[in-house]
Image (cartoon, rainbow, N blue to C red):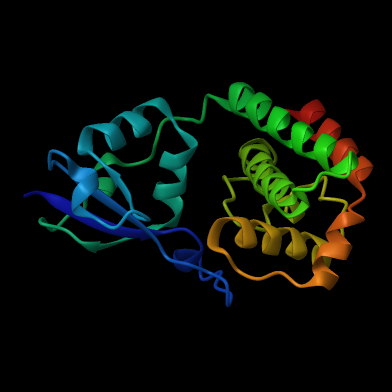
Length: 206
C-alpha cells in the first residue's frame, strides 16, 4: 500500500489556539480508501491531488503553502515532487458561489432566524473563504489564515472580538462546542449592513 500522510492548515502555520484542531491529509493508491482512515481526515488519490495542482485549485495552493509531510515511502514527498500549483484560475466562480452563500445567511440573520448560531457560523465560513480568494489578488501570496479578512487592504469592518464570536458559532454548529448566552446576544446584533458593504468592495477589486 502506497501512502503519504501530511498535516496542513493552522498548525503548520503556527496559528494555534485552544479551539484549533489538526487537519490531516492522506494521499494513497488504496481502493475504497475512505474506509481505511478516520472520517475527519482528508483522503485523496495521487491522481486527484495531481489534477488539483495542474488545474490551480485553491486547495492545492493551501497544501503547497501550509502542509508538512509526516510520513512518506520515499525521500522526496509527492507534494514536493509536484512543485508549485498552476495559477489559481477559478476565482470568479468560487467568489460567486460564496457570495450567494453569505448573502443567504445574512438574509436569514436579518429576518431573525431561529437558527441564528448555525447561520452566523455559515456566514463566518463564507467570509473567511471569500477573504482567502481575495488574498490571491491583493496580497503577494494566498493567505489561508482564519484571520485573512483582516489582512486584506480592505479589512473586514467588524471588530475582531465579534468575528471571534462568529468563529465560536461555527464551532458550536460543527463540533458541538458550547456557546454562551452573552455570545449569542452579541452575534444577534451583528451589523450585517457592514458585511454587505465589505462584500461589495471585495467584488469591485476582483
